[in-house]
Image (cartoon, rainbow, N blue to C red):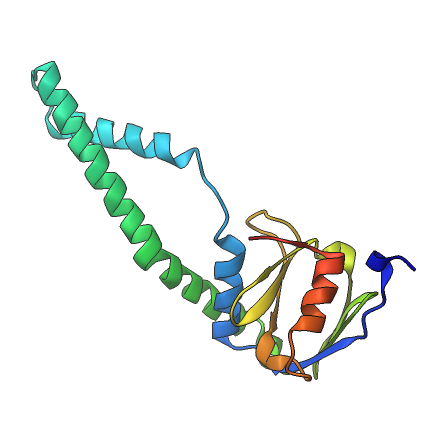
Length: 185
C-alpha cells in the first residue's frame, strides 16, 4: 500500500443537529461564493438613481462626477455593510429555521460512521449511505466539518459537528476528509 492508500479506522459520531450547527454549515458553505457581476450592476443602478433623483436637470460635468462618485461610494458601502453585518446572518437563520421546521427528522439523534467507503448516517426515521463521490469538498470550522457536493450555491451540504465525535479527537476525521475530499479555504 502506498502512503495515500493507508486505511484509516472508522470515525464514529453521535449528535443531534441544532440550528447553530446548520447555521455554521450555511456560513461555511457560502463564505467563498463570489458575485463579480454584482459590482457593475450596483454602480449602474446608483448612476440611474442619481439621474432620476435630479430630474435630469442641467449639471456641469464636475457636479455629475462628484455627485456620482459620492453616491456610488455611499450606496456601495451601505449595501456591503447591510450584506455582511445584517442580511447574511438574518437570512441564514431564517433559512435554517425553515429547513428544520420542514424536516423534523433533522432534529433526531444521529449516529454516523465515516470510513474509507464513505458515510453512513442513521436516525430513528432515516438511514443514509453516501459515497465519497457525493461530497467532493469540505470546510473545517471551529464547530464542525461541513461536507459539500460542490462550490455552487445550491449544492448539498452535510454538517458533522465536532462535539459529536465519539473519540473527541477530530484528527482521524480530518485525515479521512483530507484523503477523500478537497479542502476549501
